[in-house]
Image (tube, rainbow, N blue to C red; front, top):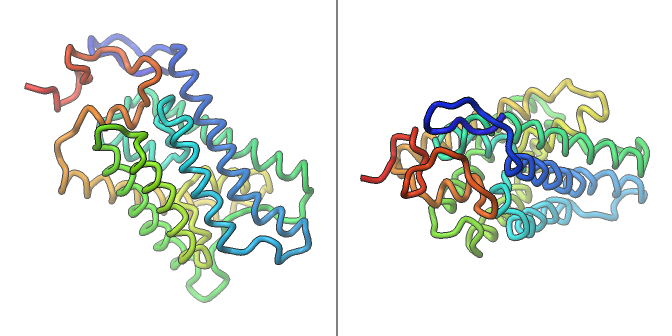
Length: 267
């Protein structure tokens, strides 16, 4: 379940991957607790207590804080769409992708179950498409566009000197909030399959779940293709952003720190 070593040895599970997966689990749980919890707590308090603006700004602010806190541990993806993008980009170990996504989904479900345990079934905290003619299609297209924008910001800030620098945390967190401010009425502005699937699974309501998997996945692919067009060269900083650097990185690196099996080894 760990990364494949550059010498072709099989994947292995190491402590650094376990710690990274735990960071992803708890980070995603906190994100879903806040993002889904805003609607749940508002309903529990009688409605009209938490504004739409507050409900979308809070997750963005949390993402910013978590990047500072745990970005060096795991890269703080807390979003399968981000893990997909880094993997497709070739700066994240393929063998780590599944453990990351499993941790993210587990954290999301745990947070949703905790909300239901604390506040009952007053609201699910789910993201749902707008109830209008063509609402599902509009929501799907919106999720594709929003995720492409978010992942583009993440991939481009990951090319800087430090992935956990001020600019990256502020840029990513503010993007989450700003996109939610204008687009949440259409699709909920999820941009994150884990954020949507967690409450859906906890509530046993999966009718629109596909939308929040397909949309972000397509958006992630589009953003990655955009990077191939505008910034085809990979950098060491992208690996640091994707994996974190407080723990040992994937084995099999050459003397310059790049993964031996990858095509962008320095000359």
